[in-house]
Amino acid sequence: MTPITIDDAIQIARQHHQAGRPAEAVRIYREILARHPDHAEAYNNLGIALVTTGQLDEVIDSFRNAVRRKPDYAEAHSNLGNALKDKGQLNEAIASYRQAIRLNPGLAMAHSNLGNALTDAGQLDEAIAACRQAIRIQPDLIEAHNNLGNVLKDTGQIEEAVTSFREALRLRPDLANVHSNLIHTLHFHPGYDARMIYEENRRWNRQHADPLKKFIQPHTDNRDPERQLRIGYVSPDFRAHPIGRFLLSLLAAHDPDHFAIFCYSDVRSPDRFTELLRRHASQWRDTFGLTDERLAQLIRQDQIDILVDLTMHMANNRMLLFARKPAPVQATYLAYCSTTGLDTIEYRLTDPYLDPPGTTNDAFYSEKSIRLTETYWCYPLDDQSPPVVPPPALTAGQVTFGCLNNFCKVSPDALEVWAQLLRATPKSRLVLHAHPGGHRRRVGDFLESRGIDPGRLDFVDRVPMSEYFTEYQQIDIALDSFPYSGGTTTCDAIWMGLPVVTLAGQKAVGRGGVSILANIGASELIANTPQQYVQIATGLASDLPRLAELRRTLRARMQASPLMDAPRFARTIEAAYRQMWRNWCAGQGNPVLQGPVE
Image 1 (cartoon, rainbow, N blue to C red):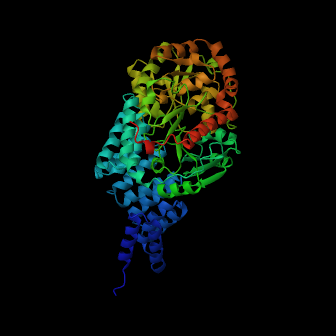
Image 2: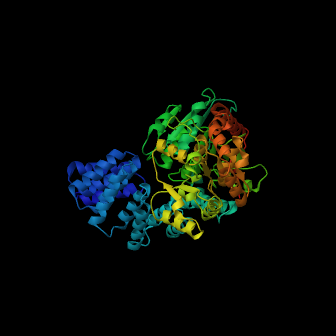
């Protein structure tokens, strides 16, 4: 019998990996390396197979061993960059990608990966250039079109981002993550209404989720409607992230006698907030790297009654897990208050301000809306935040407006209104949050075209949390973005004593400011038209005593409001969970059995 060659063994291992058997591939690669410890390709392929296990340190070691044995191995340098990026070591990842490109300038994937890492590093112009170079080299490289879409979104070029995602989907319609990126980005686009977004979500469901219905198994949970419930939360953002920050108060206030809390954490790089959240979970599962199938099995083993998605179609979501329906009841909460489009998620949490009862938006959610009594958010007390200081306008002789929302929310419509506001308040200034890059120049050029000196414009870059709060001390009046309003930043601004002027939108994602301001008793800051928005902001700017009084009292008003009453908020959420569970016990609320919702 002819002995098997190394090349044959590597080919067999690849086949196992491609067939969804990475553990078997890992075993074969380790056997090869035991006999041939200097085989660079085997180390590289071992690293690729180990990626699915989530063992990042081993992955990095494998790729380092590959490039150590073959320093000119461009693909291995690029793969090492991917692993370092996943580990949160951005500078090292960027260096690895650049080395891969030096070795092989025509390696399109290395250019695309470099663009992805540069996006995370806030070097957005360079990221766009790297992604475009990848596409020039290989026009059908789907990853490059997807990465380009992500960075274009971050620079506020929403129409161009949508075009990039659609091109990637034209090349590969079956890529669920790219389709998710498109769906999330549509929420920032003023040209897409609730119906259009709903229809795209339903396309996602038909394309990616429907084929997985064959894997759904019957649920045999004890149908006692009043027993202790096992609640599972799934997220990649149990960290210093808006999701992690808002979830902290809820987890800390859950009633452990009636609700056991399981957290399924896809966090790649845990931080201080990860540990704070972990303390409040009955069970904590580190799930980064697990396949959707394996995670579904784990959730079934844990006998979760209600599984809660916290990501929807944002990055690193688990929509394909929820499509497998590992829990009898599934709900979505906290991500961006819209719809997932999935038949297998029965409920979405909202509140009466985000989704006023009787509005037409309910027709454009595939889930049943459960309106929490008062508020969608529970804001945590942050011990890193500085004290409130008087408005800077009292001593500066000029009013400073500011919007520290993610720059992708800075729409042309918002800029047009802000230009009107700057014209109406001579000498005033505008502060925006944006990474360095050409998008800053575009804002300056836009204002200049409207007769506003771009010298009145300042930018804040990404800073640590403590410095971020300090930035609010330099601003007098916060301006909410639209058509996608702020949530975390609105709460942060109020916490620092700033009045926030918001424009009530038509979709729930455009009504975050409405909900937050209504809950602290500041509805007079809510505008229903752009003209009213300007009037409210100019009125504040011309009344410094009122600004000073708001600065002095808003934090206390927030502390006394439902926004910071964690026990009250937790009881409201738990009542919603209990009702969901009672519905299931009574044989209600299973869209998989009822058929798709259209």
